[in-house]
Length: 115
Image (cartoon, helix red, strand yellow):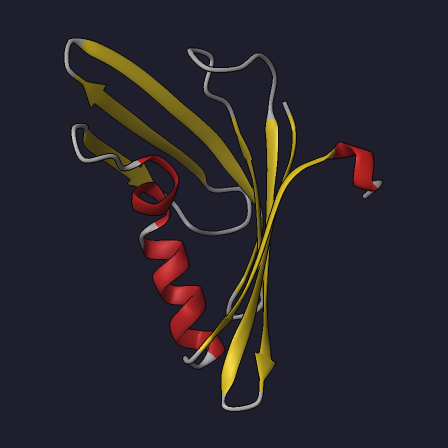
């Protein structure tokens, strides 16, 4: 992906096995992407290639929808999905996550591009 398209990149070394990192990342995606101290989340996800997800966020009286589809879900190394949040941006964002073994732990590379 050309670097001009990348909107955000986070790289972390973690003291955990890649399977643990991938499982935590996949099962708690709504918390690290959308959770704030004041909102409530209603997540529904089907974490497999082709599976859809929907997260309804309640922030006071405002309702914000987060919808997408998993393109790649290869435990424990790779996750790729689209994300639409029409209340915040037009079009689709692309989220790509890679988890690689590093010593006794893991390296996580998160990249967001698109919208």
